[in-house]
Amino acid sequence: MEFTTLKGFKDVLPEDVGTWQRLEFKARRILRSFGFHEIKPPIIEKTELFSRSIGQDTDIVSKEMYSIVDAKGKSISLRPEATASVARAYIQHRLYKKNPVQKLFTFGPMFRRERPQKGRFRQFYQINAEILGDTGPRSDADLIILATTILSEVGLSGLTLHLNSLGCAQCRPRYREGLQEFLSQRTDVLCSDCRKRATTNPLRVFDCKVETCNEVVSDAPSILDHICEDCRNHFDSLKGYLDDSNIPFVLNHRLVRGLDYYTRTSFELQTEHLGAQNAVCGGGRYDALLKLLGGPDHPAIGFAMGIERLVDLLSEDGKENSPAPELFVAGLGEKAEGEVFGWVRDLRKAGIWVEMEYASKALKAQMKRADRLGAKKVLMVGDNELASGKGVLRDMETKEQKEIDLKNIVDNLKKVLGRDE
Ligand code: HAM
Image (tube, rainbow, N blue to C red; front, side, top):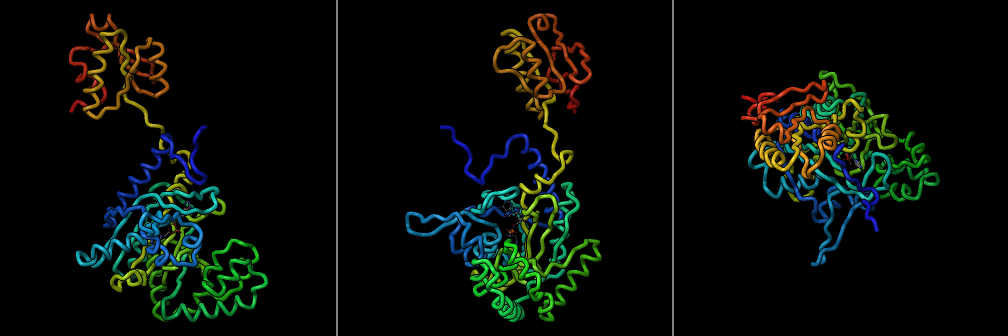
């Protein structure tokens, strides 16, 4: 029997790892310049943390979590997202006492038992950034600028920023009632899920992918016409900062996002190139979550971007060229093989990527391997070279060969490879 990955799970193969690392490296650099610090929460938490934060009636909690009951009868779950864990950590460790505004980021895998398709996996990686403890709107704008900076720095363009305000505890209930009333007159054309949502969580109907539900909500009242004065001022001010920063956006009153904790600002950066899974980055404000989880009444905002989707979108030339060794050392005969082993070990101490053959092989086979690895240079040494004290160094690109002194060969090679400082 041959084992394969589970449905919706995938291996990131060595040829793609370079692109992942480059993304992560650039994102880390930018996150640092925006003053963010890394946090590494565990990937398993109490199920209740997620159900309370994300919302019992959301698809994520009601259908997609990987939950198990542990030996003591407690339900625990693989995290479907990171925000709830970051919020828990902020409260548990009283991070706000050290600094009232915490800017935290995390990288790592998330798990959702969704139907797999292009750009949608059951294990996927996110870059997650959260600003906890600030009411905005300057922090909203700064966070959106952070997201767009990361995306443009890694080479992604042509994304559209969709922006909405979901109101607050003062104005959203009124809007929710109006929407409920609107939907109740159209239940006959709603799908069975949305018929339920229309009473339990009507804003979720905006998320439904069923065509008839989509048509219904296209005429639904817009939340942007119903937010209170404070929410309106917040939103107008955010739009002003984005305009001043030359960040174009489209208003999308249907952008409710799939998690219940959002208040006020919600946003997504979307692409036209990933089919139905068009969101590369999504986020928003969650001013009530920390209090809901038993913490202080502090506001917060954050986003997450899906790394698989970013990797998918990067054009071929944006991808990392396969990295190649700087040098291959081909030893011929027992004596030379022994010498080569020591040279390779010492060159690696200087941080030089050097390859050699473990097994004894003919020169032709070793040259073939060096070529396949893409080695830039090959040093060839056999009994004759050892006797004469001169090895042969071949430039694999120009095919030029020259002699190199074997006395102090490690230092000589460092010089040739530009590491003689
Ligand atoms: P989300 O919209 O559920 O938000 O996910 C954010 C991003 O993760 C998506 O835009 C997408 O790029 C990626 N993503 C989501 N699901 C999948 C999947 N099944 N396969 C591949 N990629 C996926 C959140 O997770 C919120 N926690 C964001 C946030 C942070 N809000 C405030 N702070």
